[in-house]
Image 1: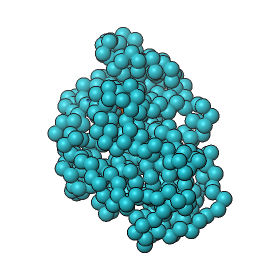
Image 2: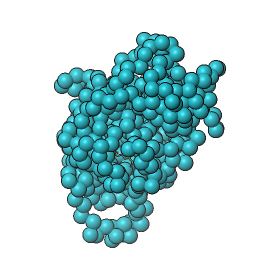
Image 3: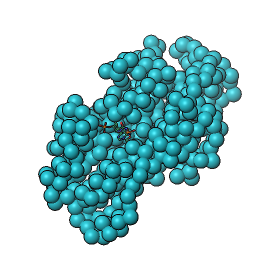
Length: 404
Ligand SMILES: NC(=O)c1ccc[n+]([C@@H]2O[C@H](COP(=O)([O-])OP(=O)(O)OC[C@H]3O[C@@H](n4cnc5c(N)ncnc54)[C@H](OP(=O)(O)O)[C@@H]3O)[C@@H](O)[C@H]2O)c1
């Protein structure tokens, strides 16, 4: 895992080969800017965007100061100088940032145990370019709208290598849902699912950030899709995106329902919960079934991060059914990343993909606005309240930029 997470200046950089504007071309709906301004800010301490709206000298960011799966204990808000982009880097004013279940694995130091606090938190953001270095200006200009998957996203401004950003037509939180959540479902099912028309697919945490995409891609492949969730509202949402059999496990017994309604077993499981749900999923596999381990969220808040799993008879169970369990970790599949994003953006543009975003509008304390609300948003996800991808609005739209 750690070989793909390159620690540099205390930040984690993730390389997206060919995702930028050069190479195989722009993503659908993204039109290269007709002119390129050369604005070298790599050696400048103070800078302005060319439309004249000044960038403040200081900003807020979330920093992991102590390793813990308890996000509030691990992370604090710091006021620091706005960073200056280097030669091949962009300074991005974050408009929205995405919340991931793994934000607490990261704050617990489980990604790269060699990286010690303090380090920056947050995996993904979307916003506008407000500063850039000389070589980055050959591909980007001030005002470009971009999204990225890389560390340090929980900040008002983030410096990202130009080769690691994804140009987007507008700053919409829906695009943010595709970077990690959508890409995980798309690539995992494509590479490890071996889905065939008519097969039965079970998606756990189906109404969440990545689950919603697994449901839609499995349906798109002609499968019968079962999705687990914890409320009737989520079950209704799952129906609306094509899920054939939403199961609200707080209202009906998951094991009994699967046994009764699917006696032949499940062909493919997209499994995100772990522990007893993983055990049940293994026991529910059909002959030649495939179970993809996407995550094990039920254990993330514990000290070990791993929920208990009774695996003693696992080899027997797999052999008797010629079944398999396959692990998936997105950074191992970057060669598939650009195609996945391009395809999902096309589907979204054509209205064939629902990218449900939950900005906390129905949360007790209201919409997630401002960096401090990341704490509330993480709690909200772990309380199972989210419907779709949890997103925090860091800043209001910039008045000087018509693209926002
Ligand atoms: N392998 C990879 O590369 C990769 C990439 C992205 C995400 N993931 C994994 O995908 C899973 C979902 O992540 P996400 O960021 O998209 O979150 P999410 O699905 O948007 O939110 C998590 C959902 O899981 C359920 N949940 C929350 N806390 C739980 C707990 N303690 N025990 C059981 N269920 C709980 C809730 O749904 P209900 O209340 O409806 O059950 C909640 O809505 C996680 O396991 C994550 O690690 C893996």
